[in-house]
Image (spheres, rainbow, N blue to C red):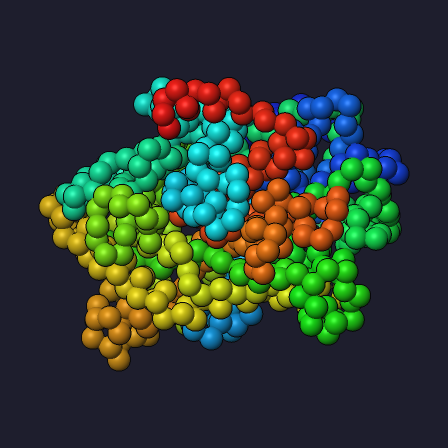
Length: 611
Ligand SMILES: Cc1cc2nc3c(=O)[nH]c(=O)nc-3n(C[C@H](O)[C@H](O)[C@H](O)COP(=O)(O)OP(=O)(O)OC[C@H]3O[C@@H](n4cnc5c(N)ncnc54)[C@H](O)[C@@H]3O)c2cc1C
């Protein structure tokens, strides 16, 4: 039985009871009657937008409209099943973007294009992501503040991470770095004994075993994930769903915002399309764009806010000339498959076994209840093993499974060419395999988002310009060398770990000496995979910063009543997966809008502990 059918079976059983209960009170949010005017209009119910609407509607005197282009999470029961993460890509809950052909990267992909899924559903990308919960490095946020983003240093943002979180990992329940009262459950799944071995390998190279969301990120750590009782814990589940009955909050699905209405440099409302009809809704106080790194710049540009030359080329009247869509940064990773000689990895057979399915159905535990990303390391490219005041260069995701063995699915979601899939991804069930996924944390190559046309339904032109700067390849080659050292540690040698040459595409790069710098350069440029972390297209910065679209209060420069609050405002992509930081931005944005300090108590505790 394929993994897809397993997931379907699981999902049907696991959600049948839930759907039955829900169906009686489930309203069709695509037809919610809208008022003419609200105090606040939030565009996009993703990681940030769900949080913002939830927090703003805590003030019963304010009324809030949350507009979401997609539908409800319940429309696709696979969303709630952690092991089905791959199966929700290319579904109706995914915007299904492709990048432009990449000149320097993605050479193993059809037309050299990277496939970019994004959540098109309540919960946004938190409803289709891999559920890794990582916040980033303290030096990331300190450098945001040093570059003019007042109020965004690590000390400033830590209370907001804590506010959201409800840590379920026993050893961290007393940690000052973790929250215990928020709605966002974070758990620490252990799937296989390989998790421990990977961490020990890091220790044998001199790295610390750390809590990567704690005091010191440099080192190796176990996975932390937004999963609760075996169910994906999206921002819809965590924040929005419990408050949907508030009378001062309207949530409207299948409602695509096409334009912000701006009069005399003030945002007065939005135009949207619902059920094929154009509707206008007005905001007394503010419009907040939370459509994500691709859609927020698209909406701004459609509204006349963007680079003058580009808007003029598109025939759009310029309202504000700002560098919208510039500075696009994304994390990329390079999969490196190794085989082992013990039976410890997660294989398709183990995952699909009847026992696994039953374990999930009955106890919401086991392989299907978790993500296969079991552990990770955060390291410097020069091999320094302790924090020396810099952010790490490389994240070493570890997957205790081959992960790419299902030809059909990987083919679809990673856009690999047929010849790669058919001749190189040969899966040998007699062999157990795992993957190292070295990730470039701070790309020097920067891309752009631009409009294809004035039509809001045309996908924007996405060009991340992967690996345009040769230093990015050098950093990834350094990552390969660190992996070679890990493979050489006694603990991993004991399990017979070996580079799987078939999966390393020897055939494509065999003009180079196997494992030479030139070989890895070729390999990296073929295998370039997005980690789905695009940021920085509506960059935050000081008012006089020519690269900034929003100020440190997230207000669009030169336009009143309009903020952007999502991953697009990040000053730079942080040293981590970007969901936690997007949620933090949602929390902090809500305080900025409300003019409130909701984290005073947390700050007091942190101050006492001198954190
Ligand atoms: C496949 C995948 C795997 C990932 N894995 C991880 C992971 O394991 N851990 C991690 O930390 N991060 C991960 N990420 C990244 C992380 O989920 C995102 O960085 C984060 O969710 C971004 O939040 P956001 O609020 O900026 O945007 P989103 O969460 O994408 O929300 C934007 C919302 O706005 C809606 N919208 C857009 N345009 C409009 C419009 N015009 N009108 C109305 N609504 C609109 C969208 O439909 C969407 O719901 C992953 C992402 C993907 C796609």
